[in-house]
Image (cartoon, rainbow, N blue to C red):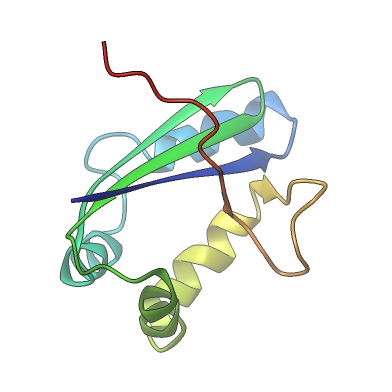
Length: 113
């Protein structure tokens, strides 16, 4: 299993954040998006929020490839529709590349106690 961590900001507006969270409440994510993610080898996704900063943790199958997932996303009209809709709630991190949403985080510490 692989694990990836990403960060992204939401537009800093309480009503917008509330709507974003409603779209991610259990059972509210579009089923086509969930099915697509599963078919691409994603085993689980968790999103955490503090203020308007979000952290996404994604666990995948061992052979999962981020570039291959991006290609499949780009070829799927429903994923484009979902991402365009989610972008109305989100804003890029200041250091994100042009057009980049979720920024892959670097692990700087790990402890196995």
